[in-house]
Amino acid sequence: MSAAKKKTGGEPPAKPTYRLPRDGAWANAWKLSAALGGLGLLASIIGWTSDPHRFAFSWLFAVMTFLAIALGSLFFVLGQHLTGAGWGVSIRRTAEFFMMGLPVMAILALPILAQMDELYPWMHYWRESQHAQPHGEEHGEQHGESLIGASVASAQDHGHGAGGHGDEGEHGGAGEHGGAGEHGGAGEHGGAGEHGGAAAHGDEHHDPHHEAHADVIRSKLAYLNQPFFIGRAIFYGVIWALLAFFFFSRSTKQDVAKGDLTLTQRMESFAPAATFAFGLTLTFAAFDWMMSLEPTWFSTIFGVQYFAVSAVSSLATLVLTMYGLKQAGAFGDAVTTEHFHDVGKLLFGFLVFWAYISFSQYMLIWYASIPEETTYYHIRWEGGWRTFSLVMVVAHFVVPFFLLMSRNIKRRLPILAFGAAWLLVTHVVEIFWLVMPYVSPGELSVHWVDLAALFAVGGIYLTVVFLLMGRHPLIPVGDPRLERSIHLEVH
Image 1 (spheres, rainbow, N blue to C red):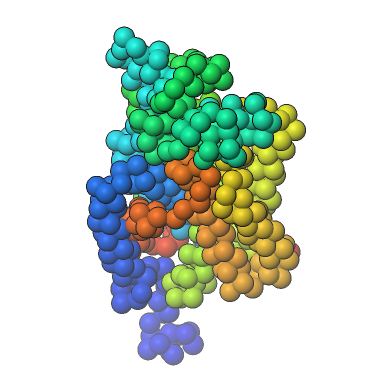
Image 2: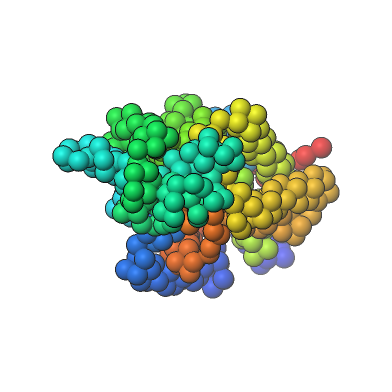
């Protein structure tokens, strides 16, 4: 009889199950997230009844924040199967949990479709084209002009983008309050309402700049119209949900059918097509939901920028979750410092990629100096947004770049976890920077509804993630490459 059996009374050592302890904090984390999500949802409903315009932007901000994490997690899983990588097998399940939040994120995006009139200035022009009002042409210039129309007019007349004290009157296009009139972008609060854009007083709507601006938006109505927009949104959600279910169901099925290479081969063979579908849907979702907030502005780099945002935020989430589970002893010896080191290298690499893409977009727009393009940065360089933008550059790139550059730092788990947490905070800040300037042009404001929406969407999303963590092993115990991953060595 072996010594091991003698020491344990004849029983061999129990194999680790890699499941959350039932009495641990992680097993009950879903209760906390559900409570926060419920309170946030209640507060968001109150915010919607009191200020539907602010609620619409706050909800979009929250959805795009957590959608980036879910999509980035899907990309990590796709990358593992696409390359047939063995090193990441033991940490892949953590990403799969966050990936499986995509179906619920698709549901949480529905309020965006219900608030399109508040969010998207082009909705006014589409409705105008549908109703064919007798004075539709006049109303097209009087109402619903977006922020960029006024900014372009100001940039062309005075050579300095949006803002300042324009010459179109108190309520004019680039007038006293910059942007698009006294009440903001393209409506009473910046949407497609009553006081937006070119002034509703006088004859400012005959300004050729505003007429040209309206013509540009009308020329895009074949793509920017409500039925097609909703159809595309449903298509994105269905594709993401199907991809998540496909890979998660086969990964968890392999937990039972241990060592089944057929399941691994199916996932790897489907990964190329899935990656193509992922890239296409993510890019156009970014175009639709965020870039069309300003319908006359466009950037072919914008979709890639949101992809970089997704990659950085998901890897930061992965590091932070792995660290928490490792500290709780849930991973046993399946996740080591080598895994953290590898994920840290990916995090650092995608951080540099994010900076490269963001700077490329800025540099090309700055160098060309075309008013229709520069307004994107003009509105983020007015009032409090100027300081906000400068702080974001330092906080989102300079600080984490030097923090994560060292190999030793990436192997010191508490410091790596701190860097990941830092990047998650700056991720929230960046999505705020991308969405919120259109709410109150020239004025930086943080509303309690913003936080309520963030808690609502984040709480519901994390509840799904934590519930799945409690129901499945934390690593793919049936993957035939698991042993190779557990004994990973980095030189």
